[in-house]
Image 1: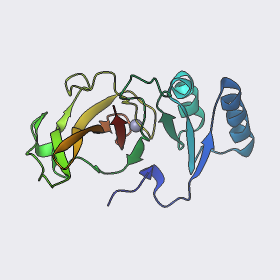
Image 2 (image 1 turned 90 degrees about the horizontal axis):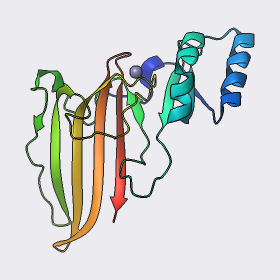
Image 3 (image 1 turned 60 degrees about the vertical axis):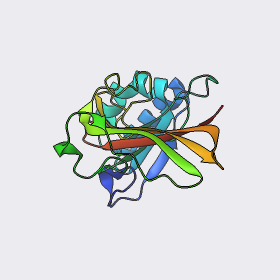
Length: 191
Ligand SMILES: [Zn+2]
């Protein structure tokens, strides 16, 4: 059973939002005063900010989770939204994903009257470019590493009464090669 931000499953987690270089510095000095290694803390902030301070955050708070937030809302970028969540086991990819070929189309899912799935691809892991997801948000939601491999990607459309509503759902899941966590997120887009 997967649990969210599961590096320290048994610990009550506290999320601290960082919004600027100054707030990162404040967090680091506070933790230094408390003598904490970051156990039970999730540091949440913009992707670029966490990437910029990742090395010092990882060194000062080795037990903290670093949860990057995707860049905000470029209107024509379909990968700009969603809430990446980290888990200790895959949520979207099948449990036996490691036994699959590196990447391939999955069997089509059943079609209901109001919903038709699109393509689903999965495998034991490829780069985001090889997964056809170049440019998608791909940082680990537990440690902010970019050393990740895509293990699941789907694009789906919704239909009502046979009419396509041109609504696209993209779901992606990837494994972090640095900390072993899984990250999944979902984008909902209507043109
Ligand atoms: Zn990681």
